[in-house]
Length: 211
Image 1 (cartoon, rainbow, N blue to C red):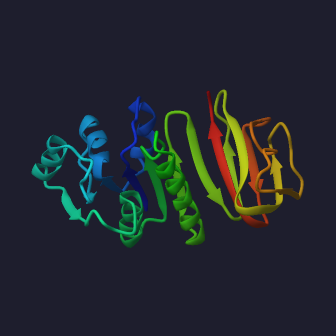
Image 2 (image 1 turned 180 degrees about the vertical axis):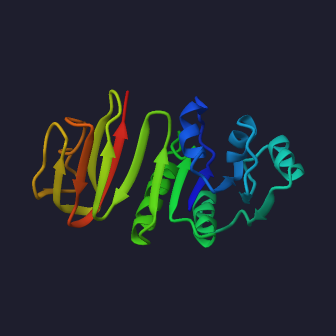
């Protein structure tokens, strides 16, 4: 089951969301992510958070639409995004897509990326997507489909990534070790329609991006 979570960072163009929305069986608005739901005329299944950043109009709009509200105290040990991920897991999602998760607050962006590691540990597919980027963290292997003018970046996460092998990329890797602090895996490109990436040990942050 695919869960779609709207976080609070800005989304400039909503067109890219359609393909993910079509696959979603559960939609969660995390606090001020409600404005994205309202602008797209989407009624989420849940509205969660401490509601310190949502505006009154967005809140009332979703409440009046019958959305189930889960309010949490402002002083808590998790971000609204992490709580939303936890709700999605409790509802049985094995694939979770986070939108509006990359913004001007570097701390929140980094925390959201770390949620991908949490999901990888649970063997749940986690994806962070915006207009120009699609990010995942893997512990084994993944197949990537080529998109026009798209770069593929592979970065170690939470330690070195060992035994990295790729196929279908312009600059192949064979049983390589990507060390933390190295930019070796940045800005590769597709050489074929389908690329394969494998890591034997550690975590690999896989980012597909375009300018």
